[in-house]
Length: 47
Image 1 (cartoon, helix red, strand yellow):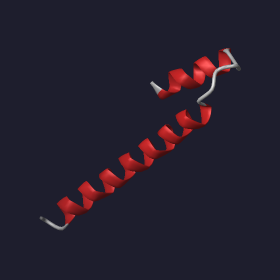
Image 2 (cartoon, rainbow, N blue to C red):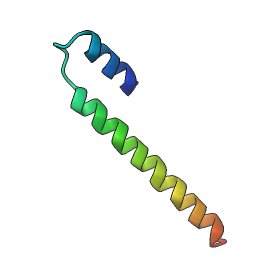
Image 3 (cartoon, rainbow, N blue to C red):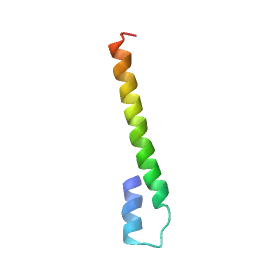
Protein backbone atom coordinates (compact mmCIF):
# COMPACT_ATOMS: atom_id res chain seq x y z
CA UNK A 1 0.00 0.00 0.00
CA UNK A 2 2.83 2.38 0.80
CA UNK A 3 4.56 1.56 -2.46
CA UNK A 4 1.36 2.47 -4.31
CA UNK A 5 1.44 5.88 -2.65
CA UNK A 6 4.99 6.42 -3.85
CA UNK A 7 4.06 5.32 -7.36
CA UNK A 8 1.07 7.69 -7.40
CA UNK A 9 3.25 10.57 -6.19
CA UNK A 10 5.77 9.80 -8.92
CA UNK A 11 3.07 10.00 -11.58
CA UNK A 12 1.49 13.14 -10.10
CA UNK A 13 4.04 15.44 -8.38
CA UNK A 14 1.23 17.57 -6.90
CA UNK A 15 0.31 14.78 -4.50
CA UNK A 16 1.68 15.05 -0.99
CA UNK A 17 2.63 12.39 1.51
CA UNK A 18 5.93 11.03 0.20
CA UNK A 19 7.60 11.51 3.56
CA UNK A 20 4.72 9.73 5.29
CA UNK A 21 5.06 6.81 2.91
CA UNK A 22 8.82 6.56 3.46
CA UNK A 23 8.36 6.84 7.22
CA UNK A 24 5.88 3.96 7.10
CA UNK A 25 8.20 1.82 5.00
CA UNK A 26 11.19 2.42 7.30
CA UNK A 27 9.25 1.92 10.54
CA UNK A 28 7.58 -1.19 9.15
CA UNK A 29 10.95 -2.67 8.23
CA UNK A 30 12.37 -1.84 11.67
CA UNK A 31 9.34 -3.40 13.34
CA UNK A 32 9.72 -6.57 11.28
CA UNK A 33 13.41 -6.76 12.17
CA UNK A 34 12.70 -6.17 15.87
CA UNK A 35 10.03 -8.86 15.98
CA UNK A 36 12.19 -11.35 14.07
CA UNK A 37 15.13 -10.84 16.43
CA UNK A 38 12.79 -11.16 19.39
CA UNK A 39 11.39 -14.45 18.15
CA UNK A 40 14.85 -15.85 17.43
CA UNK A 41 16.02 -14.91 20.92
CA UNK A 42 12.88 -16.35 22.44
CA UNK A 43 13.42 -19.73 20.78
CA UNK A 44 17.20 -19.73 21.39
CA UNK A 45 16.78 -19.09 25.11
CA UNK A 46 14.15 -21.82 25.34
CA UNK A 47 11.50 -19.67 26.97
